Image (cartoon, rainbow, N blue to C red; front, side, top):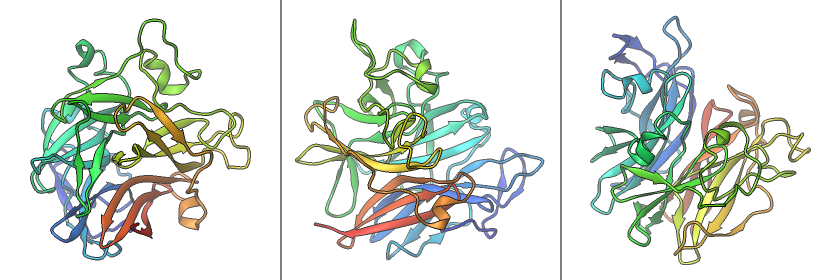
Length: 339
């Protein structure tokens, strides 16, 4: 799926008509509902005197390949309590279902300088209630103005395609971050508390970039010098709770000077890690190399070159569908049979 000039809506902040997905579409979440796959995806308008904004659109498919788009976005900057945090846009959704059927979305609210992990809920994927920063109540508010994004909630991938958030030891768990991968817990899927290191504990690797602003967090999955995931690691789709453990598909970026010298500068690839099903803090295994890298023209060249970025995974009609953004410009899918 690529950008489109067809979709238009009246932006409530700008008070003008916007072709909201005319520039790029990428980084989708997916939900199976009523015999269809629904995709919630990030879209950007072309740069105008009013700037560029990311909004989240909705599309549906009966075969997992061909999608019909809704004409207007379903979650976007508006004249609401989150307006100041979302002036740059709403980005990179991940969606799970609560045991009662309500959908919860983690997404990035961007104000032009700082990314913040926000939460919203919906009964039908079209009408969303925003709750603000996932970490607003944690640590006396000390996380409110820290860089945070990419929340992958631990869930069961049910045979009927639903992705249902599942408690472990009485708590919901979420892997998050885009420098190192950290962990947070919640009672209600709205308010989250990051896990911090204990007394005398030290990070497993030297911290870089945004991780330097959060030196007290407990790193669950670190970057690795000399490898494809040398520069950053970032959660992909909702983490999959299985009988073997918690499978986390993650995205990573490489810098040849400190990482894999065979990959171009800034290459995003995808790999997997496995955590203990009874203790989400315990890493059991991680792959030595990536299972997906940019190798198609639309993955190598775009708004940001050399990017495959995985966010959506669904079991649908006896097939796994893995959806991802390509070069921050288009949306692609990879498939494999279930079993």
